[in-house]
Amino acid sequence: MKKTLLASLLLAALPTLAAPGDAERIVARATDNTRAYDTLSYLTDNIGARLSGSKSADLAVKWATQQFKQWGIDVRTEPVMVPHWVRGIETGSLVSHNNQKIVLTALGGSVATPAEGITAELIEVNNYDELKALGKEKIKGKIVVYNNPMNLELVRNGRAFEAYSEAVEYRGRGASRAAELGAVASLIRSVASASLRTVHTGAMRYDDKFPKIPAAAMTVEDSLLVHRLLGKGEKVRMHLVLTPKTLPDVQSANVIAEIQGTEKPEEIVLVGGHLDSWDLGTGAIDDGSGVAMVMETMRLIKELGLKPKRTIRGVLFMNEENGLRGGRAYFAAHKGDKHVAAIETDAGAAAPTGFLTSLKGDALSALETKAKVLDRVGAAKFQFTPETGADTSFLVEAGVPGYGFVPDARHYFDYHHTPADTLDKIDPKELAQDTAAVAGLTWVLADE
Image (tube, rainbow, N blue to C red; front, side, top):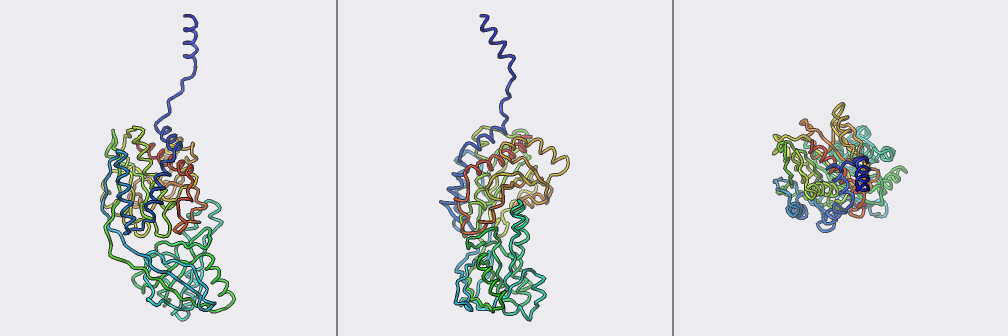
């Protein structure tokens, strides 16, 4: 009896260990399994590339919807009309230099060359000022080559997206600026932080005031070849064939899954990524990994039997890559909903570093305090920016607090928009940590 009493007194004197909170449980569960990687594996290896308007994009919508249903999560699709651009044949050769093959790819949305192709002299510029200085007399009838590399110093210093924003300008508007001066086609140096002679595609857009001319991206290596030849004062002529087609828009859909809130069901915490990808690779880093994080966030919360105070809405947007139609359609349909947070994950799946957020001042300080649980996976750092994601930008511009997940981006643009964007670039452990970060923040914001 005395021993039992003594034991009881000793136990009572020990400090009480608090049970792990729900956010801690989510983070722990996310990091101890490969479910996000398994989801990504099926999306990339079994469904493949998912360019808007394609059969694979449609299959991805059906598959994601069915997955949520199997997990017992309420889900619906909402229709979105999306562009349907098909790549076709793409070849280039330097007819002036022994017909050397140039590795290139059409930019998304480009028009085609004539069936027989275009043969024209190349003229290189580094920026629009140099283009303008050459004028119509020197540009007319030529193929303009924009030699504007990514700033690798920025990339190495963890500012890869800043470097991308600077270089991608010529992909977006370069063709129309060249057409204004009479160019017959436009080429860019692939927007890449590294290359093994891989091409990087991406969306471009035409200015309706000027003729639409074919536009393509060359590999870094082939851009440097052209640069060296022109630097020696040689005339360089290319034969270019591109046969893309823009077909009529087709109906696709956003996939929307929800876990209803218990105390404030009208208040919505959105967590989203985009289901479409470019057609060269299988979209593992862009943005299959984001899709997997969103889907696993919803599955984890459901599996753990947690009931958030606010409604959690997982959205898989369609057509981020070449039109943002999904983001626009979602905003048009739901701008009257009471969103209290919009989280977007569309930056790959390397080791987590934190989040961008539109919050600042006291609101940002309060968030950092509430989200300390993310320290476990190195994602508790928040940095202010007015732009936190493409698909959620319409909500953020309307005043909804935005959050953009930030993995280590130093190698993201090695593979971005290339045939090399495949599952083997994803580390299952890092993807699990990323999922923990996204799921953890989602719960912190939804259970306030």
